[in-house]
Image (tube, rainbow, N blue to C red; front, top):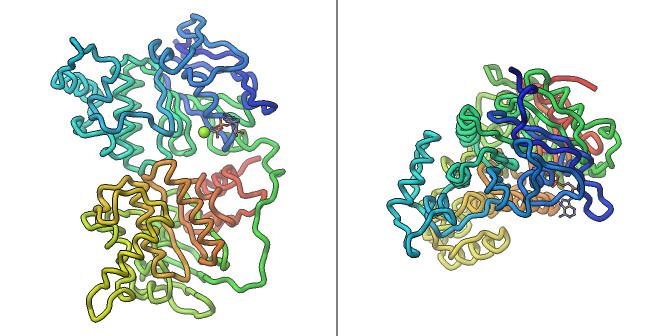
Amino acid sequence: MSLADRAPLLEAVGLSKWYGQHHVLREVDFRVHAGESVAVIGENGAGKSTFVKILAGAIRPDKGKLYLSRQSVSFGSPREALRLGIAFIPQELAYAPHLSAAENVVLGQWPSRAGITSRREMLRRAREELERIGLDLDLRRPMAELKLADRQIVEILKALARRARIIILDEPTAALTEAESEALFRVLKQLTAEGVAVIYISHRMDEVFRFSDRVDVLRNGALVASAPTAETDPSELIAHMLGQAAETFESTGIESSDEPPTLVLSHWTLDGVTRLQDVSVEVGKREVVGVFGVRGAGADLLAEGLAGRRPEIRGKVTIDGVTMPVFRNPRAAQRAGISYVPAERKKDGLILGLPIRHNLSLLILHRLARLGVVARGAERTTASTLISQFNIRCRSQHQPVGQLSGGNQQKVLLASRLANRPRVLVLNEPTRGVDIGARLEIHRRLREIAAAGTPILLVTSDVEEAVSVSDRLIILRDGVVVDELVGSRKTQGQALRGATGRASA
Ligand SMILES: Nc1ncnc2c1ncn2[C@@H]1O[C@H](COP(=O)(O)OP(=O)(O)O)[C@@H](O)[C@H]1O
Ligand SMILES: [Mg+2]
């Protein structure tokens, strides 16, 4: 029996929502069956979050009906929806930070006898759910101390502990690393195998095709496509995301200037599995130039080459008119005025056991050092300036960096790389593993840094980041520059289309 013949677990008919005059959802129909996973995609502002929040009871529709197992339902709150088996995991997780993970899992649900809840019993109960999804995690630790990926897992456990039959996630992988995303999808896959329905918003095509049974595309508040994933392809989906409006966006490109570019990469070439073929890129004085490609396209090679970590690349670098070969080592790159923010901050960006203060001055010790000793006063002053400039949330500059959240660690890293006033800032996946709030702050800072005259080369495999932060976006596919997007062409759809090579529309 095909899915179409079975009764849907959850069905929405004609959902509409207005915010004032703004028609954000237009008669959207939707169905999900037990054991099915549905990806919801669309450009920013398409109405995805509004839509799933209605399914989860967080927003009331102005029109339309919801049916759960064919029964008409209407939720007054996420709590009511949860009681009926629909769990929602928003982008900004809501949890009790000081309670343990186990307490969060059973919070508000565990019957406490005479006001006293047995900790051991609670832990046992939470562990049961953890075992069910085959993961390992220390549930006794306070939520606030867990990584974002683990906090999401706890949210899922929470949903399972309440016997949720439908789990809805709003861009769950936006701030996860590749490995964390994989782990999350493994869990979700197992849940669908057990009959749970999963609805998730995604901005990554690879996730859509690896995990979902069906994909629904929203554009401008309307459902413009709903297809079994096996029967569609990225180019078709992208065409639906963009629609006719694709070419009519307002231009946001920067004005061309007569100033010579600050940074020029010329004819970079490298043979190998991940290769580069005669890649040339220019970055102007106040520009953020993005380089976007799928994994293996070679984009990260550009960042690493500029950092002096890829001496095998052939080609030239010109900085402020001075031309040299691709850097032989990181020292050479630093001497040429390049500051590099690596993707793996834990591996090679920060020293987690050291205080924030020291991490912030790692690159400027020579400036702060006097008579061979670091001038403590200068270091402290520099640290407090950077902490406030970058809005780093910490107890004090003496706190070890390892105690901060991923987002705040990333701010420390970025600040440390700017402390020595580089000529050019090069970033490789700057917001991977960073929560949404910090991500937005970092994006804003990057725009400001460029505007203040430090050009930025941003290498990212996150299409939303690539499009929203860059002035100009270079698309790399299999080591070749296949497109350059500015103004009205600089959209997520165009970027994906170029990067995946599936021409359409
Ligand atoms: N509370 C609100 N008040 C007014 N407008 C809103 C509100 N929430 C969302 N919107 C608008 O509704 C549209 C859809 O938003 P959203 O559902 O968040 O889109 P998406 O998740 O696809 O990016 C956007 O134009 C957004 O600005
Ligand atoms: Mg959204």
